[in-house]
Image (cartoon, rainbow, N blue to C red; front, side, top):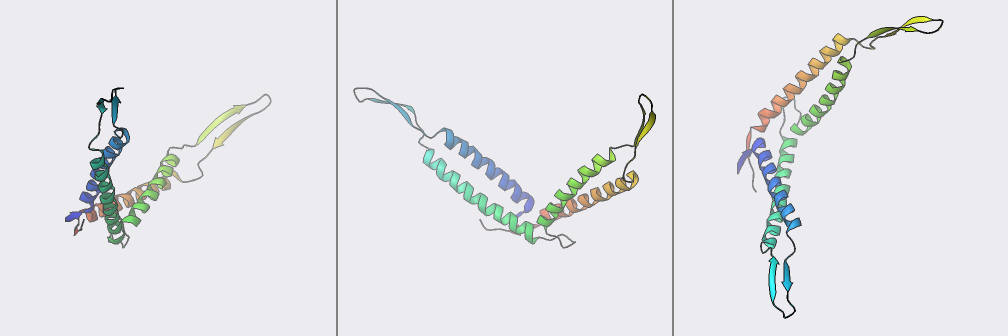
Length: 167
C-alpha cells in the first residue's frame, strides 16, 4: 500500500474509533439471557450471537493498530527535516517551545507598577519593576513562534511524502 504520514495518521484514528466502538459493544453485550419455565421451556430475552465475531474483529483491529503505529513511529524517527532532525525529535522540540511560549506570554502580560502606601506615621511609594526587558521578551516570543512555524511547515511537507507499507 502506498501512503503518507497524513493518511497513515487518519487510518490510525479511524481504526482506533472502530476498535473503541467494538470494545464498548463487547463490554455491554456479553451475556445471553433467557427465561426458563419450571416445565423446562426456554424463552430467549437477550442474545448476542455476533459476540465471538465482534471479539475477533476487535483483536484484529488491535493488531492492525499495533502495525500502523509501529510504521508511523519508524517513519517519524527515520524521516529527516532539512536541518537533520527527525520528525519525532521535531515534535518534541515543538512541544517544548510551546511551553516556552506560554511562559513568555505570561511574562509579557506583566506591567510595572507604583503605588502610594500610607501608614500612621509614614508614607512611601511601593515600586514594582520588571526584572527583564519587555521588548527583548517580545522579540524572543516572536523568534520562538517563527521557529515553531518553520518546524511545523517542514513536518507538514514530510507528512505528505509517500512511501510503501505492507500490512
